[in-house]
Image (cartoon, rainbow, N blue to C red; front, top):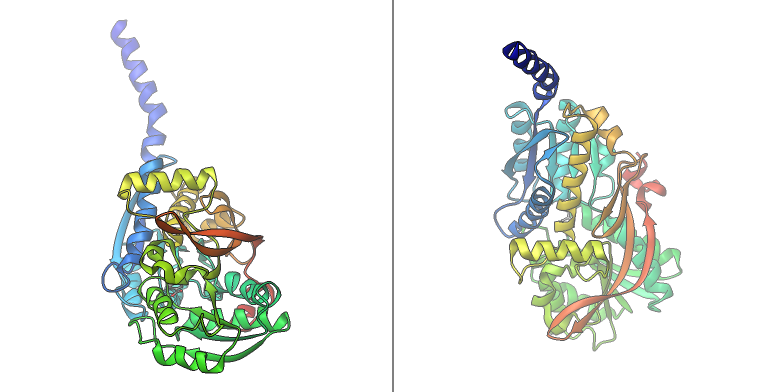
Length: 401
Ligand code: PHB
């Protein structure tokens, strides 16, 4: 009798547990980032953000495990990333793709994502029209237009600049950023007098000749986009060395030119720099305090997240949401449906994936670099709430296709 009872209890337990056990899946996430070379710091930021999220929330979502398969895209050229994506889709049979620091790497991979029907969650690549390239791309990072266009408007109306020059790293996000700035600046009544391509994303150029050209033209404002990191440090240094501020020219740009991770290296030369962006480790909110504290605990007191780190954290949250919503059965259309309208309380503030464009909606803040005791930080002097990508809203160029 006893043993019969035990047997039937065991059978009941097996019957009860069987469906749950049999449906537990391992969701394979292909992660394509720059892990080596001059841009390795970007890959490290994003991966650290992802790993912090997994550490804090477990790497099982809705009962399904996450396996991250990493590939090094090395350079911004597109070819290595595209080959990596091809391998991840055909050989590793990943369920999802994520990462992508440089726009050309995301752009080159877009047709494969469409053909392979693998959802892609972009954690950096910021050229506005990238999600237009495939119905299976969503972005948690930012678009160049979200900072560039308000910066143009702000420069004219609030910084009293009537003329501006712009300088940019000559590849898609750079072209996007200066087009956005010009739209905002000239829309408010200013005049862009020069637009200067300043080399490519792979090598940091000597900025001296470009900046000398700007000094000679003497615009009120100089708007610069370069990729965050080594390019940004060199920009702030060249601006100071050539005495552009003393010549009455104000340096402005998207927050890529003064990310948290390079601010201390820029030193006094960065003080007064005015940028617009969606994240700073200095934001005074509980969500951000908790995030920065956990980051320092995980990676060291002298480390800091920047906008790429927060995109890694948020992107992992988005992927976790997809896995839970789809109960581990990742399918591209359903994944995009799960991401459309997804809302999340990010360390950067509230974020949402726009249901129509699959692009990020978030606040933009005007940052002014200040000295804070023995370190440098930013003060937020103005906020634009829930900014959608203006390039798609205005249907500019490829954003209208
Ligand atoms: C990009 O290639 O899209 C990119 C890279 C670095 C940035 C911003 C955009 O800081």
